[in-house]
Structure formats: C-alpha cells, structure tokens
Length: 525
Image 1 (cartoon, rainbow, N blue to C red):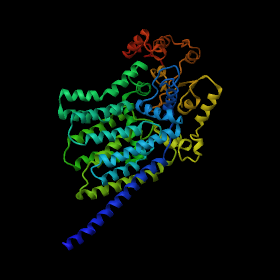
Image 2: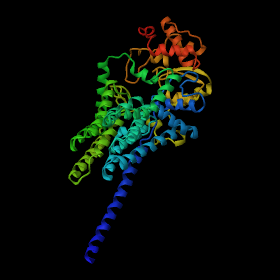
Image 3: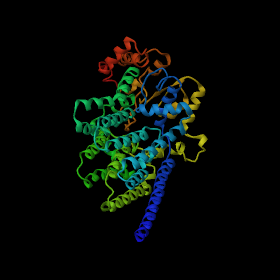
Image 4: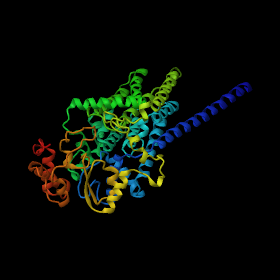
C-alpha cells in the first residue's frame, strides 16, 4: 500500500507540471496571436467609408453617406450597427475601430481553441496557425467586417459540430447563419450547405419552420433596406457586380486573386488545401463534408465575381473554416506526428511569406504594393500613415493626406466635390460636404451606369460623371443633359430623397426593382 502511494505521488506531480506547462504555452500562443495582430493593426480607406456613415447615423442624419440622400454605401449592416453602438460612446473613429476588431479577433481565437477544437492541444495549433496567416492578421483590424464574420463563423461551428440537431440547435444555427448574412450578404454561402445538412437530419415541416424563425434578423434587415433605401441589395454590390464585363474576364481575375495569395501569403491558401485533405484523415462524415462544401461554394463565388482588389480579404473566412476542419480531427497518439508535421508546414510557409522578396517590394509597373493584376497589399499601401505602429504619434493617427484634405474641406464649408478615394476624405470633411463618388460605391445613379471603359481594376469601376449632374446636385434641379438619363434620374430621385411613405416613392420602388426603367440607361456610355 505504501509503495503504491509512493508511485502515485510522482505521477500526480508530473501531471501538475504538464498542466502548468500547457497553461504557459496557451498564454504564449494567445500573446503571440494578439501581439502579431496588434503589430499589424491599421485602418484602410474603405473602413472610413463605413465610419462616415456611422458618424452621420450617430449624429441623427440616418445611416447614409451624403446627408439627405438615402443610399446604402456599406456592405455590412451588422458591423456598421456594432461600430455605431461603440462610436456613440467614444466619438472617436481610429482607436475605436481597431480595438473592436482586436477584441472580436481575440474572441474568435478563444472559441476556436476552447469550444470548437477537439482537444486543448489542437486548439492551440489552430490559434497559432491563425497568427501565421498574413491575410487573417491584416483583416483582424482594417475597419472592415472580417472580425465579426470570423466570430460568427466560429460560433456557428461550435453549435454545428456538437452533435444532434434538436429544434433548439437548428434555431441557433439558422440564427447565426442569418446574422452572418446581415453582416455581409454573401457570407451566407459559407454556411448554406451546413444549414441544409442540419435541416436534412430532421427533415420535417416543424424543423423548417424553426429554421425560418432563425432567419428573422435577415428578413428584418431586408425589410428595412427596402423601406429606407428602396432596394434589397447594397449600392456597393450594384457598383461592383453589375458592370456588364464578360464573365470570362471576371473568372480570369478571380483566378488571379488566388494566384496572388499563393505568391504573397502561401500559408493561407495551403491551409485551405490541408483543410480539405483533413477530410481523408478521419472517418467519412457528411457533417464535415457539408461544412467543407460551404468553404468551396464561397471560394467558387469569389472566383466567379472576379475576386477583389484587396489581396486576401475574401479568403480569411474560408481559411478559418479550413482551420476548423483541421482541429476537429482527434488528437490521438497515432496522429501526433501528423500534427507536428502540420505545425512545421505552417511555420515554414509563414516564414517563406515574410522573406519572399515580392512580399515587401513595390511593383514599379503599377505602383507601390499593387500587382499588375490590380490586386493590392492594401495594408502595406496604407500602413505608412494609417498603421498603429507606423511611427507617427498615436494622437496624430491616421496621418494620411486624405485626412488633411477632408479637414480643409470641413473648414471651407458646404460644397459638392467629386473624387474616387472617398473614405478618409469623406469622414473628415463632415456631413456638410456632398461627395460624388467616381467609383459609384455611394452614388445610386452612377452605380447603375456602365464603367467608362478605360483602365479597369477589380473593385474600381470608374464611372464618367454625366454632363449636368454636378449642377443638378448644386441647384436641386435636374440639369442632366442626356434626355434618357435625365428621365431615369427623375424616377430614381423620389426613392433616395422623397418622403418615405409617399405613393409616388413606392410606385418608383416597385418599377425600379422590376427593372422597368433599364431601357433608359442600357445604351448610356
């Protein structure tokens, strides 16, 4: 008996030491993740587009870009409302947005490690892999909706992989999917196959009703969007997706988007491949296959629309899904060497990303940090003035020339101006300056016109300002020279400026959404 007790005591001490070391390792991994994200923290010009809308909203002008004109100049309603809630307290754009992004990213890492992963060890590997992805770190801040998408996605995975689909579980899954869609409409594709699988497990009208109940946030938002803005999809989507460009051209640009990441940030792309390969390391599971199908569906969509001009932005969510698939594997003794190999691959490719010459070398043919395909390392482009650790005193951030131009416009007073870089300029110019967006993200008329046919860059489809349009905005009287475009604007104006509940406005909303006036602008160039 005495000998048995003597043998147990060292084992107990050894276990305590193992636990202590695991806690230290956990703290080190999370510190590395937050440290890397903090070091790369920044806000881009597109983030300030949202912040101008937030500022107008908080000051009582409504969620609009130009005061008095109801146009949805943002793609992420839930993210906008979340920032607005915090901004209403702080009334400060830069540190508020960065702090919120970092906080949501920390929550994502926490739930990934301690709720989604099969084991503590695999969860730590998952968090470490997040910290080694350039794209994931870059868009953990930036001012865009990615951090909230990541958190909602990892919460969805937590509920999804917990097993049986009770009615309550189905409601939670549907609700999280709905919130993902409100945060960004196309993010719903990430979880659509998983939702179909979850419903198929019960396959009843009652379960379908429960899942429809979970879609209430999306239905409420779309109802508000139709009433307030007059349309179901954001103006930003109209400006970027309805361009009339050949599908083969867009597919080629979409493949360029993946190639860009393969060169600049190979670990992010490789992780998705490893996530799919992980399906072969476990017993066949329809649940895991459905989850992986969402990742593939979204990637297909990204290629289909031509990718984006921000390198890596649309790949962070599928990257996170790949991590989830990997850490869902059982961390058994037989597979520990595979985990070690996986970790070495992650570290190796991430180091390769940082030392690869292209990574930090401007492309002289087009401009600093912009590839010939038009895809940009957006963080590097803005970091010199908008990065948290760019070298400027924190009280001076953001220190970018568009900010100073906006502050000068604010001092001059009311004006109508036209520009393509609208974010920082617009935020610091304030609500009294009407800004005509040459890229049409915030302009309902220009978004519905074809691009001008000059140099085309994905996400940057410049429209020519119609003769007489600036005078129209300055005087409040329609001076547009082209008679058909003149008539089209007369139909559009009540929707974006008329009384919300007027009969004329609702007549025009119906006609416009049924494309009854498209013939007026079909041939306008």
